[in-house]
Image (spheres, chains in turn yellow, purple):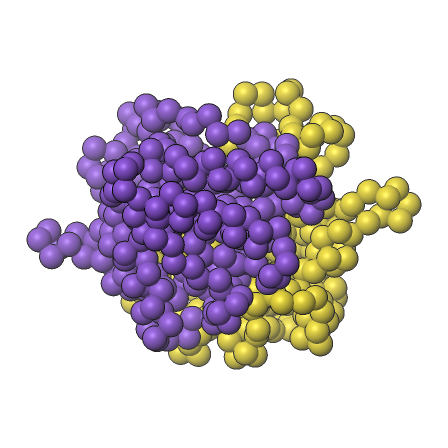
Length: 247
Length: 247
């Protein structure tokens, strides 16, 4: 972790097919903003790289290169349009292949013999931000909106991938009505993203509970006294961690 | 929809790289069981077909062929190992490409001009079953398990894809500890799947609420009197629909 006076390494991963797109423009603005703040930014533009998403066998030079980028990063940004309420296949396949056994899962602590996961792993402490564009209206991806809150929709990424591997999941940066933006709206969204990146090192991450004996039993279920009676995703959040004022 | 005396068409989609796998064995058993009950079964073995998952531009002969299979199917089975709490990229890319504009979304009712979605669409009334294998222990994918209930984890597929396009989502068939099964355990799981398929036409689907003025307001949020105070995914389920006794 870096202090606020010296920025660190960032990896910006983009999954969008078109160079002339809202997503590419936001990426350009975000990368420029980070660089102006002193970050060393590496990019993985998956479409431009011709990334192969289908996992057939482990390893490969392309996988090793992405793992090396991740290991030096203090901040990981995954930017994508929300397709069928998840990542585009090319980005899902980046995760499927790069986060392989021994890197993303089955990471064993040699001292204890325990598998490191959920708040612990090779990527422990890195900040992870999803920047997501969606065609939905703003109300749709809210807690009582028909699509579910963006944090419930992205649970497999935020908790099952970022937090699973030890990363600190930040609240997603969500851009709705992405198919109908005019220039003024784009400018406002771009400025909001740039402002947010300026404070990304001091943001409070989503407070998911760690997998330890204080919170989970031997069946990896929440102890009865944690969020008693609750059955949903929200039960796995530390209620003492404050919600940010992002929007 | 067919009656229980004459079975209909089924489409079985498998996303697993290995021919000699638990998944392939379960697929073989499931397809054989459906055929023995009179179903006409079409298969899409995505790895064997060399399916291209990356969406670059709409359409293609491969996309049209899959759409034709879907349109005649009364039952759609998607079978996959749970990778990073979602579909393998090859299956996500089957959805990204096949469920294109005018087929999976942006389906407009010519009479009313409304977009058909969430309980209504080109695939209305077809039953959809996810058959999912996971390395997790059984407790992990339960309502208070650390990974979240399988229905919360698969919300983007069950609600955001199946229900979005009008299909009737059945409760997922979940196989846990899939990396450690012995022959006896495999036999029991196979028999459970075969038994379930025998009754698949009469199963009660997950009771997600339809997108209509009775349930959602003009901001596509639940009316205050529907699941009052609830914020999570469960708020979008009709509490009058009974839970099945599957496990």
